[in-house]
Image 1 (cartoon, one colour):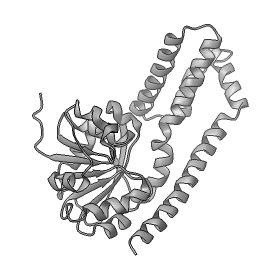
Image 2 (tube, one colour; image 1 turned 90 degrees about the vertical axis):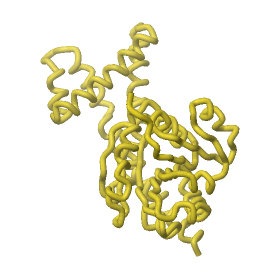
Image 3 (cartoon, rainbow, N blue to C red; image 1 turned 45 degrees about the vertical axis):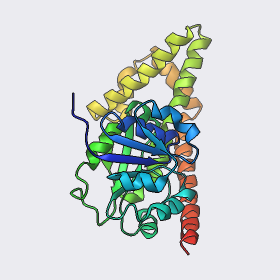
Image 4 (cartoon, rainbow, N blue to C red; image 1 turned 120 degrees about the vertical axis):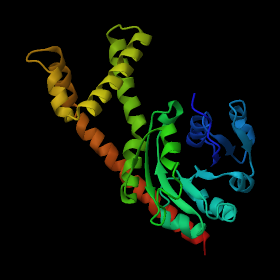
Length: 275
């Protein structure tokens, strides 16, 4: 068994994502989770996570600080803990707030802006991160090791994070909608509910693994399933008739546009907070 790291991590804002991050990290790290109302996260204490409402004290004790609060709360939280994070690496999972705003709120911290999704609950998240210009990987050499506890990771340019939030961050909701629709279709044909759920979920898992491992284009893999006059082509015909691809393209476009709007609003709010 791998020895537990001595790195101390605090997660400020242990909501749905923050709490899941804390749980994913705690087998390997000493983790403190904060929330204004500790009653809502008392369940984390039973999993070996220290729970507190004191953001500043948690940040002072930590080697790595993770921020997972709503965009409008980011600047007030950073101003509260600015002295405690001097010289430390801070990873912000808050949507929309760019690294330049983070740096303005706590100028002596070193920032990483990141985005993940709800699959971190089972350590299968897809975490994208962007480093502040003055932060090299040598500054916190174990950063990638920490993030790998959440699932797959990839470093990207910050300009892509808003669209990736709409696609990968929101993506599980789209996939759950597809899986749910497949389940309903199977139920309509008389398949037992538990069997329908497993069949839909494992089909999604298998298709995703095949896509990643082969590197083939989705259309090429889809054509491997289609046979002339077969079962699948009739299903595909119905999907095309409903313009399902257009629907998903519109969904990602709409979510991306909303993300840009929220980003502009959050930026304006953050700048006003620092005046």
